[in-house]
Length: 630
View 1 (cartoon, rainbow, N blue to C red):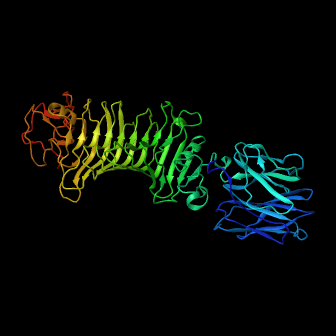
View 2 (cartoon, rainbow, N blue to C red; view 1 turned 90 degrees about the horizontal axis):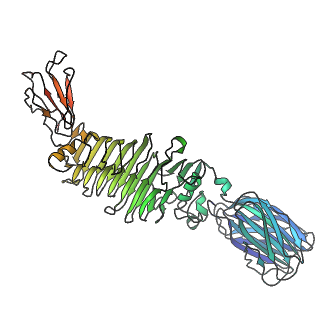
């Protein structure tokens, strides 16, 4: 069952051997429970006038019958208990003419049951053991087997799968109650039986009750609710949600079970309720696994996990990643075969050694607002995007990562991320690619790296092949008077074509004027210069290697090459010409190949490692200025 199998909770019993005008029994039921009343009487032509309770609940007669002088009545409250259920007094009033008959009243709560599904036929007998059947319409019904018999002494035994109901008081003169319950895993005919210690007359019936959330009610639902608290905290199963801590066998507060249910159908949305906003969802050392579909190969339906309150907390204390995928291979198909996962408003708190945040493998769409925090130095990666063969863009709204060794590993093609915020990175804020990547492209609108615990690298490029990754704004901000990021960029690359483009770089001290140098780790000598060609910065508020300060002219002679050794693109404004090749402007790329431009343009943008020269002649009054400002 999605929210726990239905069962019998508290049972209270009261009897009278001389009869009574009314008889009451106080039942300490939980809110959300269903109340069933079993009445056994002994006499002739007996009837019941009414059944009520102290909450004003109304009761429906499900059926009655007799075997000689032995009578059985079964009532059920119309609707579950609500409000304050403690000490609910159930009152049974025999009809006029029946008030002197011996009577036994048993009230029982049904936990996680919603209403009756089916009522079987009454069976009677004397020499044969009590037996009754009922046909259920859905899986997981709770089947009550209730009976009355002439007075007997000894122990009643019940058939396989049945649990006997404990009747706590001595029976009245002439009549005794008995009964059991069982959960029917599959719909259909269910038989219940008992063996009485002596051969006496009896009457019995079986009644089936629907589970609070039977599978027929949760399958194919577009939205599931999950609660972090349930029976132990508020007195009823999963605090009324579809899934939660009372879901059978759960170790994830029902989150995993909700994902599994959606994956078997058409997908849908999981709402995490904020019933325990301070502590949130404690999944212990049980990671969440993105489920496979009904074929058992990969998940092919969209699933959204959304917080009903902003940044609903999920706490994980195990090793490895808190959220992983069990897909082993990308199927190489598009459209409906792609996997979709949306995380919105979820905060993961990772506190175990070697724990991690999100291990997103073979998931082509993640529109997420995710925060990951942990313990720096324990090898944690906040978000790990692994490669796949997808050919469509994947848009992500915002990732927030805190207190991890690596903030984000971007090893995926076609990723579009609106904003990345990384705080207190231990090793590197952003890692682009890994040793297994081929061509890699992506876009990050804004990357804010701050409050770091002596991170080695701001951006570390691990891709050994061509990349084309663009970052709109890169804010590398420190919160003290000394830089905490050892190297702004680490660029040990094998292919030196520009692979990372920064539209604008901010390298700042928080609360202090001025800028900090952008530092580079990439070897020494000619290798270091070659590595710098892998990066280009279109503009910057930072002291960058190779900058020409504004206003400092550099004379130029014919044939002399002027090289842009900076990582910042520099715009060189050229003198007016006749529109042809009066000066013969030549551009030399990073590989040393010279190309004479077909006409003298008004300006040339020099990328890192490129150079220009005048092949024909040099204007007498012209000098070159590095236009990038520090």
